[in-house]
Length: 112
Length: 433
Image (cartoon, rainbow over all chains, first blue to last red; front, side, top):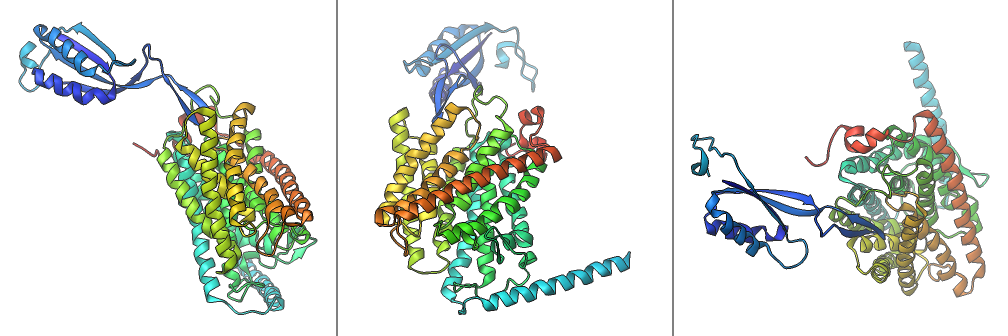
């Protein structure tokens, strides 16, 4: 199993979710987060005073998938989340030791 | 014990009767006149309009500009001042401002506790004395509340209450007397239709001293402190604008042509102020902002206040545009000077109020008054005296009051309380959960 964490532009959330559901993903966890990458922050102006806002709002999606879906999931996220401009986000994939469905006690791919 | 209480009660009755007698005599000596129902209705409504400027208008305007951890503390400043200063005004403030003149400097004590302020007509108007008193009460309340923007997010609540009472009694009442209550500035012929000096210069320059004495907020200039809810500020702007019609047009003290003229000048200056600020900001920083438009509207309103009943429509338009651009410049300049007038009371009310006082000396043309450009050069000089005297009196007085409050209770919250925020540290509640 793999844990996929992806940080995307908030307005791309719906597109990414639709695409992943179409692919057969059963569930995901979404969090509103702030951070910066190479995009850095942006400037805001209030009554002539400029503020450098370092942390940009993003949406983080976490999903756990069977190993054989890794490539398709990554391709789907990239296709749906890309706007082409700076700040489109990142995808991180890591090995996952186990998964368990609390209601039934199923373990592994069956728990997803 | 019971005897002592009886004695006090009896003394109070005697003192009250004396005050009543004196005040009744004064009222009967005034110009004879009958109550005008139209005038009375308009000033009653205007008084409620000005209340709406304080709460919720100013509370929302300021509340939206602070960080979310301080929004209740900021609203509490305005709300508690409204309640407290209303009582102070009833007990002593009104008498000091509008009691019989003593040496051009202060009003007599005959109206303490509103003794003798009743339903009889107020001299020179068609409204009951009580209506005049309550209309002025709202002005007293909003003036102190305006100052709170300069020390937002860091003033200790007990210090705020003590400061408000001392400032209202020692600064607001005397200044209102000088200009409106038969004092020396009014006698000189100084023109301040609805409070450019009494309300806006006094709150604006009082605010400047507060910002300097209290010092910057922790992290000022280092970490961003953006407004937490600009729609709230815009809502407050709209309520202030609405209430300002009572503030300015009500200052005609009647439902008449003067009120109509002030009403129209007020609206024109508000709109021109918004456009003036927006364009100046657009040219300088590349984007017009919502906060800029709202700030410009308030700048235009503050600036037209002293001349609302004396300026024609085109003069109001010109003054409004100038006010918007000038106050924007002042606020930008403040950022460079580095003092932390957190919500820009100085840049908007101080600069706007002084500009309006001087402009009235230049542009007055209606309401039986004329300024320099309409053939009366002397008026400009009188207006300058009014502006400068108000600034000096307010700044010195505010400084002394702050020092006293600092010694008695301490002005600022602790650094820890400041970083937690006023909502939790001063009031044990939070606005958003």
